Every structure is written in C-alpha cells, then in structure tokens.
Length: 267
Ligand code: ATR
Image (tube, rainbow, N blue to C red; front, top):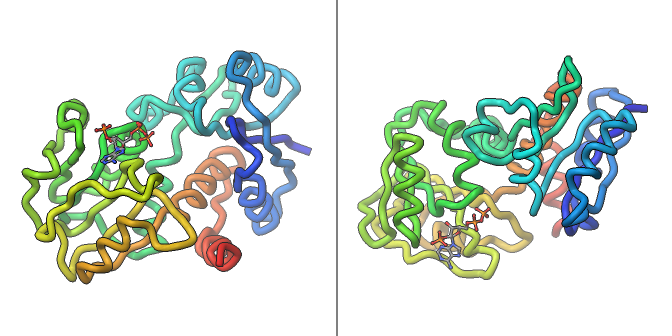
C-alpha cells in the first residue's frame, strides 16, 4: 500500500493521520499515513530514507518547513513565495518536489467553507512571520481591493509588503474599517492580542484566526465584542491537508463534514 507520513517535532498530537485516513476512506483511495518524529540533526536523512524506501509523500510541519524547502530539487511557485515547504513528493525524474499548501488551504477554507469572497474587498493581515508569508500570494490571487500587513515590528511588515506589492503599517497607524481581518500573529498562542483599535472592525467585517482552539480565540473574542463574526483556523488545517492529498492522489476530498466532526470532538 502507498505510504505517506507527516514529519515534525513534536509530532505525537498531529491530527494529520486521522485527517488523511478520513480523506482516503471518503475517496476510496488505498494508502497508509503515519507520523514520523523528525530528528533535529538527521531530518534530511530521514526524508531521503523515506523516499528511498518507496514512500510516496510527506507532510512537513514545525520546525522543519524551511529545511524541507532547502533540500528540494524543484519547488512550486507558491512554495518559492512562502520560503517554506509543507508537502513533499518525488517528481517524474526522481527529483524531490516541494509545495506549500498552507496558503491555498486557508483561502479555500475561507471562500468555499465560509462563503467569503476576497474580490474587491479590503484585507488586513495581522503579523509578518512565516505563517503570513505563506498566505499572501494565494490571497492576492483572489484580487482583493487592498491588502495591508500590520506588525509589531513594522520593518518586517514593510519587507513583505515590498516583496508582495501590498501595504504595510504599524498597529497604531491603521485606519479602518476593513472588510476582512486575518490574524496571523502567534500572539494567540499566549492568549494575547496586538493593540487593535475599535475602528478597524464593524458589523460587516469578517474575521479569521489562523490559530484554532476549543474556546473562542482572543482575536475572535475581540471581533465578537465589536459585532463582527468569523472563524478560526481548524478549517485551514483540514483544507491544507486536502490540497496535499489532491497533489498526491489527484482527487480532491470534501472538507466541511470533517471540520464539523472535528469541532464536535473538541467539545
Ligand atoms: P509563525 O511561523 O507562526 O508566523 P513567526 O515567524 O515567529 O511565527 O512570527 C510570529 C508573528 O507573530 C510575528 O509577526 C510577531 O511579531 P514580530 O515580528 O513583531 O515579532 C507576531 N507576534 C508574536 N507575539 C506577538 C504579540 N504578543 N503581539 C503582537 N504580535 C506578536
């Protein structure tokens, strides 16, 4: 049976094996998907070894996405733009091919599962780290009216804005309201929030947190208190996996029902 795995460190709590098992069952594909604890020294050798043993595909997670990027022979355009790889496979000539499905997964979650459109809308993105870099190109491909990147360290926002041809700002200098606000800071992890002015959001604003949790995230709580609705990033996790599955198997799984059942399991 075709073998797939996710490599990360830590990896024990990864939801990827159960997500891919669900996709395989739903689409009638026969495959095995397991976890592989990445070694901080031997990561590259582990990847080579997996493919030498006829493994078909790997997902790569924290902290190896940049190292996976560095070892690829061929990169997709979106992986090049992201500077990171979350999906590996062997190409036609035996080359190691790397892709990044995080950004397209997020955009697909927002547009397909939440019915939002980016077209001609003003988009504010909070944060300027690796997670934000990975989603910029797929957002821009949806033809928004504008994309503004706001970050605590403004220079990092400016560097991304220069590269992707969008706008940069400090949190303090932002002027709203925006149609869509996406939180890509890691502040949520510690339960904190950047200093966001009330005027950034109103009842028409739609908010998305790239993080997800059982309880409403602090960012979505802020949105809620200002009369806005939105969603967390559980669907992004499922949709980036679906994009990898599609790359490997040329079959696109349906994602909304899995997001629903994972949400219920978290309750
Ligand atoms: P990731 O891979 O998750 O994007 P990262 O590259 O370390 O992680 O980026 C983290 C992002 O969260 C950065 O934009 C960071 O802001 P700085 O560039 O100023 O460091 C942002 N961030 C983290 N904690 C934050 C906080 N408490 N308030 C505001 N922004 C925060």
